[in-house]
Image (cartoon, rainbow over all chains, first blue to last red; front, side, top):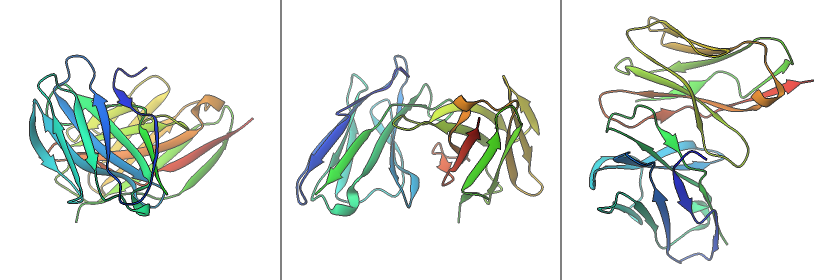
Length: 113
Length: 111
């Protein structure tokens, strides 16, 4: 157990729907990062939050959004889902905001049908 | 643009042999590099990291080498074991905090 908790582990939904993925960072970690992993794109950085505020943004689609709550857990919202959104979504956390010592969760596998 | 790439998609080694996994990066401003291991059904797991002011760092059975002149990073695994079979990713980070990952290489250990 890495200490980073992601729920749900698996999610199957239809095109056009909206889902929310949840991440609880490791105790004491203030930064949360979201990554998308697909077979043809590898691990792609989506977005980072640090202590409740957005810190960095990657190739995140406008249909996707995220937030980090006061208790430091984070949610990634994916809307108007398309078949191509099927992927593994990983959350990682770190103590600071510099990307050192990332700890990854075990991911959420999203399947859009 | 920024990119991190792995030279080979797969690597097959005999159990007990040493493994060397190579990685090239293109962002000369990167100052922090990490190797991750990902087993099936799990998230990437930190193996070892190195900063740009170093050229070598050793861990338990693993060594990371950094050659900034040619922007090359390698991971050496000594006495490779079946449990080392996984996908390995190199990642780099610069002034911002996000890590840029390579596409991954599969290490397969033959018994």
